[in-house]
Every structure is written in C-alpha cells, then in structure tokens.
Length: 209
Image (tube, rainbow, N blue to C red):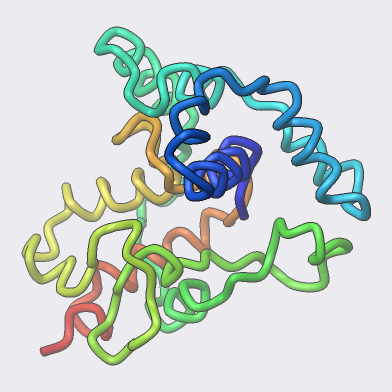
C-alpha cells in the first residue's frame, strides 16, 4: 500500500546502504530521476494505480520537510486533514472486533497486482503493529497496540481518538507513515469501525488477559 513518498523513501534507504560516500550525496540526487526510476519499476501497473504518484498538498509538505515540518505547517496539515474525517451518522464508532481482526490480518488491496479488485481491501495492520499477544508475526514501525483499550479504560474519548487516527492519521500526527485509511478510501467506514472494535472491545484479543 505504499504511495509515491514511501516508495521513494525505500529507494533512498537502499542507496544509503551502498556506502557512506553515496549516503552523503542523497540530498544532491535529482528527484526527477528517482520519480522516473520508480515509475519504470511498475511497467504493468494500471493507469489508476499510477495516479498515486502525484502527491497531494500534505504529502508534498511532508516530503519537503522530510516528515519534520515546522510548527505552523504542522498545524496547517492537522487542520486540513481533520476536516476530511467523517463519522457514522448514528454516532456508533465500534463495530465487530472479529471482522476487525480479519481486516487487520489482510494485506489485500491497492497493490498493482490487486487490479482489478476482487474483494474488499484489508488494513494490513500487523505489518506495522503488534495487536495481540498470540500473533508472532508483526512489524515494529508503529507502536505495540496490545492492551490498547484496557490501558485507556475503554473510554469514549479514546474510542473516538482511535477512530480518527485510523480514518486519517495525519489529523493527529502530521506526516505520520500510517495510511489515511478513511480519507483516501482504503477502508470503508464500517471497516474502520470494526478495527476500532478490535482495539477497544473488552472481549477482543487485543485486550484479553
């Protein structure tokens, strides 16, 4: 589910590993050449998928400041992204945690190999987070979410905050590496509610003793 900014980050990281002399020259690399190389790496990608190479205003700012924008820009990003968050009409933010676990385990969707789509997208949450004590395969880019709801006493404000972070992480943490699942249409509102349930339900494996 990597966008243009993340793909470029990986390419730059690989260059940095080649040697210290190259690493010192990263700032001087022609970004147009990087973009061209990235596009060339996906010759069979659909036109719809390739449209993701065009960064929006937020990602342009995050790239410009290497994910560490000045305070004023940070406030602007947070305000702009907060305005994109939509809430369920009935006000219920918690869905089915069992479906949430399935979504968290699924990495399907938005890869160029997934076109044309045959099923709903997954959240691929375990790629970056530990959510349950039972799961032994998970990433560490994001913090562990074990006992997430229990630590927060399953409070309504923290439930709302969890929904907002999943819907649009940049509203809470501008230039976050976490996808804007709701704003960018990666997950539906119902799917986001199911992931919130996984994190905030007392009976969920995330919060079980």
